[in-house]
Length: 492
Image: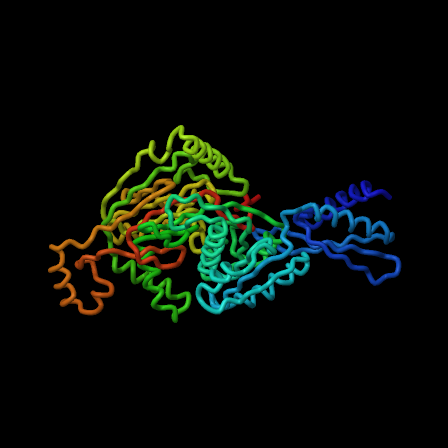
């Protein structure tokens, strides 16, 4: 029997098995192994593949094809192997970083039990590095020869992912001769994809790009070689790079939470709830000025209720329009950033949030900005002005349900490609009030002054890391990194 006929039979059998077992056996998603049945006449080929389950979950499955003719079974197997060999998107050698301390400290256990066996089935070789301290992964990425790897895998939470992101982008810019400290530098995308095996406290990046924080699902996305381009925001102050952000860049409420929780790491995951409740009660507002450049190249808007999904039209079209703007600027036809007018907003804010993605997680299934897009070259800037505790609580509760969280008079949202923030310094006439507050409330007031005491500035929460500089400049770089993901697929 010829190879063409065998391929037709194989596709037919795959279709029949898929109908019977509800298993996706697209060759792009098939994992492969071969085994003989114990009987002398029967021969069998076992195909390891992806089975779709509910709520974006993928599972490993196995389908066995039996035939009395050994030659025919070998032909089936070889045909499928040939098809898989043509898929150059699938990784063959990966560098794996495991954070043994993140989340509940089960990163190493999760990788060895749920992920490593799947990589072995898919004939993927790995080199594993278990991190020993903060910035271990970032420093390693500056030293290791990355040419032999097809991707980098992060086993941990959002903090671990941020560390690998900083290291990979920094290494790429160093090798390309790009000065990261220049706010207007054109950053070079890395050819390596990043895969996330969720093992942290929130796993926001994983949840926002796949739709679930499940280790086996993420491993299968890596194995089939999915690719998803994602925006990255570069954060600068005085021509100095402070860091990169892909999820939340928050000042005020979320900045105070992360700053306070850093002092309570001994509490584990509960420190976020404790610090959040404490920050809510303090109800600090911060005065400052926000300047931003609207992202006029984008197709959508923050309130159009069109979430970013797999094969997103908004991301694709927005990137094309942004490239057209950059071409015009390159050839001197016009400079978009000079032609467009910066908008300036002054006031007192409870929180200033900038998100490059929805920031969805199990506690907030729609996230901080449900219509934010992963690769449209923009960030959603959310301004929460000073309001009562009750109104602010109503706003926070909206993150947990399906209602429009921007439908408040004290909330404003803009889609931007650049923004700046400067805080208002403590004025001299307020110094006497501050001194009286210190005398009245003692040490508690000096650490977390109540509303009657003036507060100079908050900190920035940059993807779970504290930035103590209040004034900064942020620029979005369109689709700077790629993940082993495909975006959130529509559920049937």
